[in-house]
Image (tube, rainbow, N blue to C red):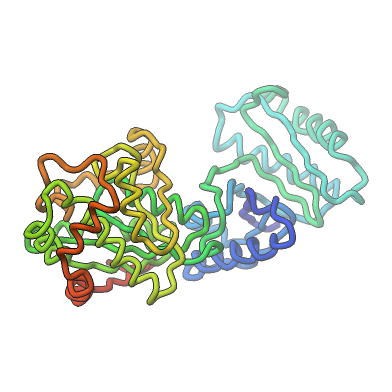
Length: 395
């Protein structure tokens, strides 16, 4: 008998001719996250991937696999040869072990899925016969409840048989890397880490670009961003973080341009720097944590003016979310407590009292005509530092 983690796949099973590409990518990502703790075999099947593991590493393996996108459920299972007599014996042993761990369970139901149509009993017959055997074996402990049972015993009949009762929810989505490389504009706040997670969940392999204004912002603020990136690598496995000092650009804007334009002009320069990195390193998209109407620069007009200079497609997965929903996501993925640490970011430097709510592209271009844009970008790029963060390595 083998110990199997049965991984149920999500929307990738609905793909057409390219389904194999997505499943192959999921298998590669599984191999990557389990590489250092080991596995015995990984076998893709229709709608599932069966991973045979060392039972001693089961909990650790489940925790790793929970972060692999494309999987919707993990079911710890036992697998054995497809034989009716064997199924009866193993089912009794399995239920006995479950009741020993969960003596509060009082009702059960058997649910069978028979993919191997050559097996002599059909699904309903297996449900009925196996249910009677379990009821007889545990008549003083269990009764049948087909509507809301405490114990749902699942039986998958394939080339082998699988028994399980748990479906551990995961994040679903598309396999990491299936939608190319993207660059996340990562601040130290609540929003941008969630945005990066959500786009990684849609298959984008994420690196990050962080802007600071040292010495107006502290080294602790930058360290906070690196720790947020480290948390995100639970899901992305790796992340290169580019750090750029925006202060020289902010000083020039502050000296030459109307104060109410500071925030939006700074955002336009951020996008230009992101453009350069995208062109050099092959990033196909930019991702931001912007949320419509949340702050002055995130009005429709502000976003339009920012997008005017962006070259790759800009993803804003939080655009229509309420703040409470974003916070729930941050708590769920583990970034919230780090995000709320009280360190200021570059957006607080030269913050205008009355920022422009309806900026226009023509106004921004008129102000930028007073600046040496390329020289300012070159100067900021000279401050570029790269930190390579890996999930399995210490920060």
